[in-house]
Length: 474
Image 1 (cartoon, rainbow, N blue to C red):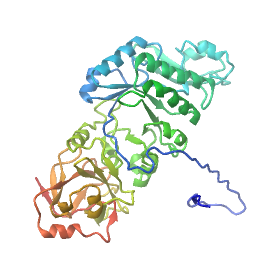
Image 2: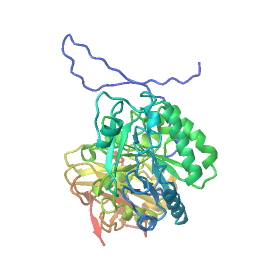
Image 3: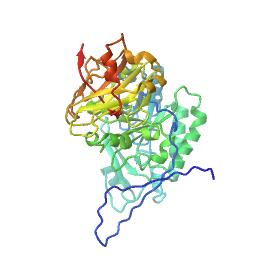
């Protein structure tokens, strides 16, 4: 037979088993397509989110993020009722129309798992004996639920709205129910009547077939759009965040894993496997503040503006990526065997291979993002595989006259230039400054031959690492 055979090895790591005891090791094989499988990974720095927790005008949003993808979270004046965006239709329609006129896009928070008690179908759903409203033996939740629904419900999210009223909600079932049909038809109605550009999923308790049906139903409505209709998934990092959702990934466009993500303690490998969407061909973003901007960039990730621009501000990084022509660059990360970036750590910071580097390739630009995962400062040097870089489009003679340039990025790095092969230094992870760099591989006038010699110190270097020696301040 000519059929290919793949060997799968499943490992638990170290497990302590007491004598005479039994250990069950359940596992599940998830066979799912990967977006862009077999093709070079491309970072998406073009889709830039303004995640609106509280009401913000379109003008304010696009002033902060030109051509923004505005996410209307639940709980604000435009989308006040959780998972029920059908009671504020006219304000939503006007907002979407205004956003489109300003060159922006609009996505709505709308999923299942809980349903606002403002839903006009609430009492009809309650009569279905637990099919759509999850029953419970005890009353609970907000006072309105206890006073009016009283029994056969499970209380969920509630919050006080800007007008002083409270939006309470009840649990709805996960996975396949007839309520999924309502959800799909609701999205189609929003597309037809409000012209929305995507949906923000706060968790995705669906069977694979539900999102497959949604994508199939959306296709005739959105196929002619200049920008695709986007499904964006947010979830916490409890356990391995990918496991509950991986079968849905072929139908999603981006991931945003946040709550319970201990970014600071995660190794580079954990970032790759549990935070980024790279193994699945998806774009990812960081939730939180600027603290992890250096490390996220090595995975093509920036933080998302949420809940307000002062908490996270990726605009200085975006501006530099725009200047370099890197809005949708090809990525060759430190995890790839074909990475042409070679890192040699000169002074270890207490962590094995602490510096990781990723290459971004634009139409005419090559740039390298590096970050330090050690809590201590490290010194390192960068080497390059010139044969690989030439195959990627770098001029053949570039290695004779190349420099590394760090352009000034507010809150990220100062302006400096190094000769290739010089020693660079990064501060420790968690220090809050100079934990990483974004370096342009700049072609200049021919340098001294010693620079060329230092750039060829390749045989013992770690692929995808970092480097440094002798910096030049400007």
